[in-house]
Image (cartoon, rainbow, N blue to C red):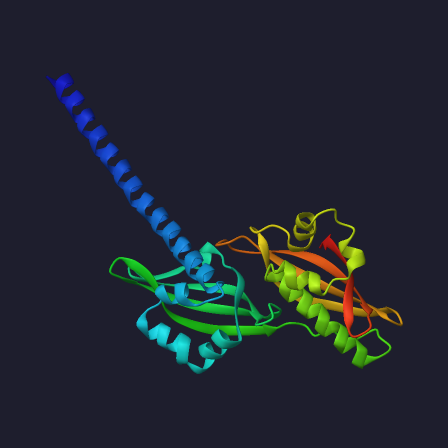
Length: 271
């Protein structure tokens, strides 16, 4: 009898222990899933903000934030004058307020209408749950770091350098836009003739579609000859919908033509 009672007690203890373990696992799994879900929500919202239009981003906002995004003084200026090109955040920066609210800190790279990097911005975004869907409710700009100016110019004529720089920026804008027609319009025939097909030229200049070039910045400018200027640039590559970016250096050789400066050579180098 005592043996049977002991065995019965042992079975009860094992069942209780098993229930406790499974209970702890049941608590742990939803927490991890909830964290992964929040990471996905932030990534989807920021990815929508990298698009050339703001329709998708607005679908992921509350009515209050959408109004501020379109009309508010701080946000509306950014909508009209530029957009997010790349972003990154640490999942550990997600701070839950309660079951239906959380905050996250995001670092975003902004570009102007010419695809040139304008600033790096640190934002804090508040998300809330409405009808079981997470939507952005508030964006607070914490810090904005403007791009570094390209100084000093190593040139003979500042006026000529500005004209050459203008052409170089147009050329880089078209590369980021993946517009081969406009890109080759600024490229001399000697360089183009080095490629046996237009497809090879396109692959060399525009790279892949994913990851793709999302922005550029001018890093240096030097006059190597009286009618030749070298412009150093950096391209930003990002994978669609993902965090972070990579950099690729591109050196442009511009020569003075009959009417304007023209790109005579392009050399890429991993930085």
